[in-house]
Image (cartoon, rainbow, N blue to C red; front, side, top):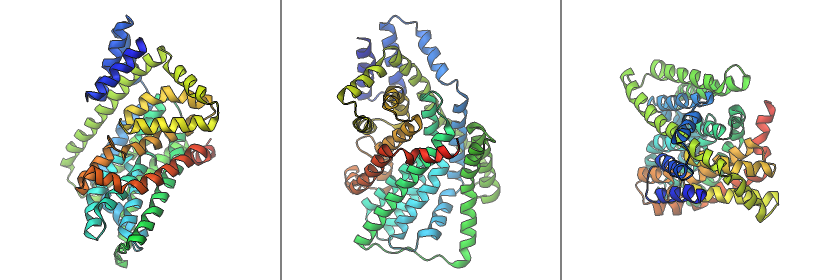
Length: 425
């Protein structure tokens, strides 16, 4: 009965479109009342869920992304990508994918990637003769890299939910799959561009190339500072995030100087708004996860999945299917917090490394971001491209196929996720 109240009330509140954080805490309180638990114990679990030093990195990563996004880094990365790959067939589309690779490593957010780069590149692609559904599909599918390529605050959320898995290992573990996903989308993008005879990109004047490359590298150095500090052991993830944010601030306001310092108030407002949502989710999911563990739900799920088949590969496939289905109806951050304590024990029981599982989890949920009916990135891309969700979803079909192929490779070839972390052990 306790499990039925916890999961049943959670499902009903979701159907009623109650915000996910409120859904989690209401379900927890209802279950606690039935179990005659002191409500203070549930509140203490909420506070305890935020008592983690690694979580301090999240506000810095969010702030760095907001500063760079507001300060014109999107346009500079587009120009930088155009220098590298813009001259070939379907050049603007290829630039879109490569720019997403660069920007994802700064913002760590698929939604930020789509909003900033998409607002420039989708109209640009349509103006150059690309179909609107293709323009949207290229933009949102490549934006999914943003949650894999470091630094990604979603990796920090997983690290917390998993009980302290190394953030540095997760960052390096996500790099290989993120680049593989970008490569797969780029190959598909080029193939479609050739088939539909889309135009080649514009040639950039030689005298402009040094300035474009310099400005692009200055922005990308944010990632180098953060990753270099973590992997060298000089800084913790939190310290690297703080130093990376300081660097982003200096580059934006004293080098690029595209926006006045007065805009810092708006940047901080956006940062605090996003941070409040993330932290409230972490707090409420901590109490929900505690009740799940208390009621032995993870053990029951593990027994159920392994009971279907003890085969390692079958269990991985079932985990992937579950995550893909959940990703279609829920956002990424709450799903990381809810699914990790349930499915991680199952994964470890069949020999999956926690870093490999974390990367696989993030990749599955990244596919969910661009999948109807609740894919937030799909909605944003459709709004920017001014096309219906149905048309955008139809245009995404070949891109879904490419993402699933990469997902299965990551699931069944653990070295894709684990090779780079093993080099820094």
